[in-house]
Image 1 (cartoon, rainbow, N blue to C red):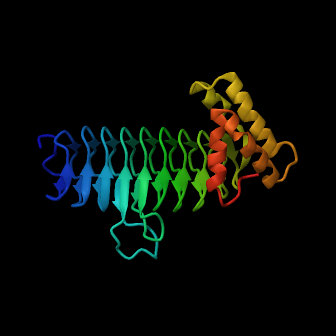
Image 2 (image 1 turned 90 degrees about the horizontal axis):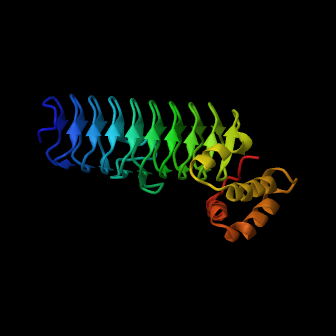
Image 3 (image 1 turned 60 degrees about the vertical axis):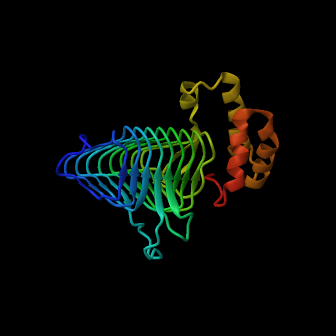
Length: 258
C-alpha cells in the first residue's frame, strides 16, 4: 500500500482498496471498509463497523464511526454506511446507529459536508446534499435528496426534511420540512420555495408553478394541515414533481412547520 503514510495506524483486519490514500497519523479500526479512490486525510479517526464507498475525500480531524451519543447504547455492533463521491470536511463527526433505531447511520452519494457538521446515530442522509458549517442532526433524522442546510442549522431528533428543501442560517428545525420548502427562524417557519435552486437543477417553469400551487395549499389558503395534506396527496399523481409530496406525507409523523 504505497499510498499509506508510514505514521498511519491501520488495523490489519481493516479492508482498504489498494488505491485508497491515508494521510499522516490517521487511525483506522478493524471493522472498517474503504472503497477505491477514496482519500483519507491526516489525523482522521475511522472506527466502528464503518463502510465507506468509492472516491470519497475525508479531510483532517474528522471522526467517523464513533459510538453513538445515546445512553441506551450498550456496545452493539451497529453501523455507519457512507456512499460514493462525498466530500467530508474538517472536524466532522458521524456516529454509528443504535439497536433502538434502524441499527445504522447512512450517508448517500455526492454530498458536500462542511466543517464541524455532526450527524448523530440512526440518521439517513440522501444524495447531492450540502451541509454548511456547524449544521447538526440529532438522532433518527432523515434528510432527502438535494437538501441544503444553512450554517448552524439544528435539526431535532426524528425530524424529516424533504427533497430539495433548504434551511436558512441558524434555523431550528423542530418539525418536518416538506419538499421544496425554505425554512427559517429559531423555531423554523416556512419562508417560501427554493425556486432558484430548482431552476439551477433544471426544473421547468410549469413544474415550479405546480410546486407553488402545493405550497399555497399548505400555507396560504387558510386550510388546516389535514385538509391541505389531503388535497396535495390527491394531486400528487398528476405530475412527477408532485409525487415527492405524497412520499413525504406517508412518512411524516411530527407534523410540518407552519
